[in-house]
Length: 343
Image (cartoon, rainbow, N blue to C red; front, side, top):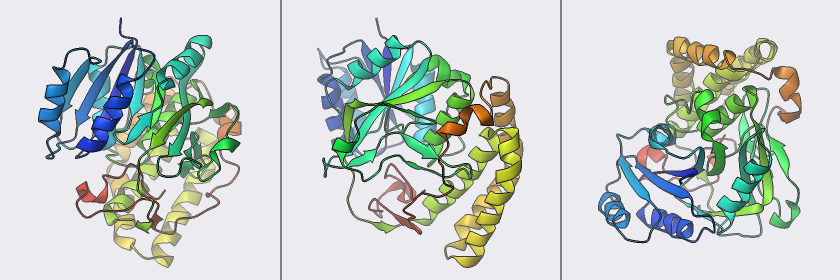
């Protein structure tokens, strides 16, 4: 019986994907299938995955090739094919420890009211420090990684979160579908915080636990964010705010966000992608409002119930100022192969 569907979006990451699948082969819990969703790779991913799926003794593997749709579209494609009652979203550069699935599934089984579980995401090239321990969201709609840069030994207690990074996240399939899945319009950036926010608003609690660990194989250089990343980040965080914020929160913070966005355009460089993001939100407002109506139909938690889960500040303590924490390589798809943007 398959209880867990592990969904892995990928694009031109054959070496990393092989590492991720090898780590899955060592999982102590075995009642899972793997769905690799390929965003149109041209590095030999397709024949390698077809050959691996035919290999005897491996975990069940299905390979889907789709038109480039970014992580959000790829994960939605995986959800549509998933047979498990729980979904594990794992990025193609994240190496799970052997007990990750077992620990997270045990947490879900012990608490029927829990919607999703994550663990500590640790930098693979600096295993003494945390990449993320779930995610943080401010009332302005900005999202960032919780506990980023802290010593890994300092993360010692479970924490409730408004959202959890989909680099490694186990969640009940029914909760994801009830929340409407990922917003396929996002392509890249804020797709995981948007989904987690919707799950929380629909009454699904989410928790990170320190004993579940995985390692994120990312570069350690800081580079300038490419224009497509700025564009997608700015458009997606505004659309997410409009679609998901409670009525009173939206009334207060949408004008503040728009003021912040206009000041950002006027006072800082890289104006074109930011203006394009605002224009996109105007053109696509009907679709965003449809997402809002969909959530309101299942919403159980308003602003007051979620208040403790929002960040106590509007901006992260460390601002990136148009920079990114990962290398931005010219060969990446629109500069966005890296798993994150400068939020």
